[in-house]
Length: 140
Image (tube, rainbow, N blue to C red; front, side):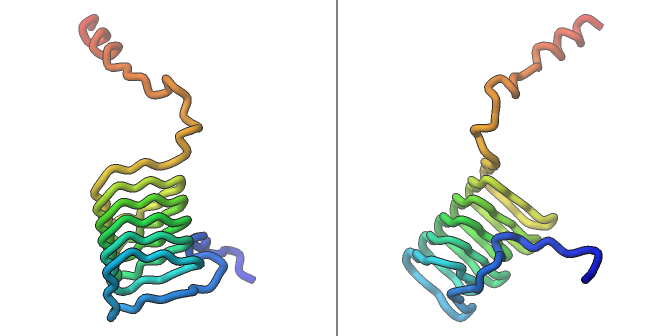
């Protein structure tokens, strides 16, 4: 046994991939699934399921709702997910709402991001202090 172990993405997880959409497949319409799916082809429609892996050649045009996503490909649509890993080869155009978000250097993300548990934010934590700065500048 080695001293160091590489941590795997939990989305890549413990279970086997239950479905594969190959790079020669184009699906037009919504996809709903259970288990873990890997997409190397194209889906034009919304996707809903548990664990979703988008390969480098994969492309989704539509919203994705899932427990976890590992994205190596292109997504044009909104993501609503518990855990998401956006890899260096990925391009995501759309909003991301996730509890856990990881973006590798080199990935492209265009759109609003809401990450974390909003219940943990205490009101007033991010109150603007701009007035304080200008008052100090005038006094100097």
